[in-house]
Image (cartoon, rainbow, N blue to C red; front, side, top):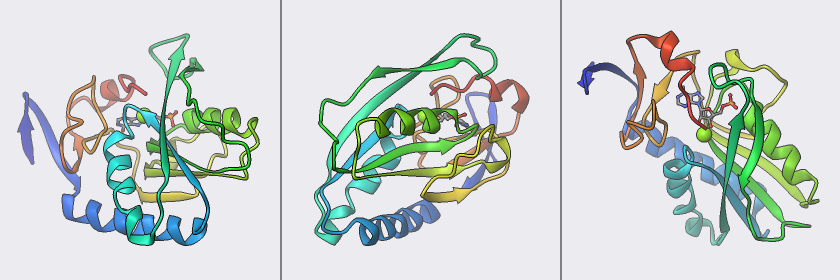
Length: 191
Ligand code: IMP
Ligand code: MG
């Protein structure tokens, strides 16, 4: 257990396990999309560390994906994440007939990725797959399933490896569970 900024953390996934799982994920993705012109789209901010690790392994498979980032904003009721979603920053690349991989840090209720997938499907990509580092299936409010999942985790609020609590702790190289006041943390998540 660790104490950072007066909060208690317990490591859930170590740096070593993260590294080896990311390698496996890239292998899976590369096998499925080999020879295609892949466009990787990350959802800011949470995905940026996972995405940079993923992206830097594609050269091993002689793949050279292009990269874009989007920002999705939730508005409406701020307390519970049932607010509506809107695209705040879009990509500028044309994805029609291209192979697209949407990447996010964590699949929670499923609202963000369901929204993003529907949004990009309208542009008629040849393929649109989704990849998340973590998946909390218990929290889902829809039927959303990601094509590639790093780890399934229980219904706990986690930080590290890009994921934040109140915009903090994204820099941790491992995934940790916040032990105090979990209920409160849950609703402070930022996309
Ligand atoms: P969803 O729309 O409920 O699936 O939420 C997705 C977004 O909520 C993710 O992209 C994360 O940024 C954030 N999120 C969900 N669960 C957690 C968590 O346990 N820690 C930090 N952020 C989270
Ligand atoms: Mg996010």
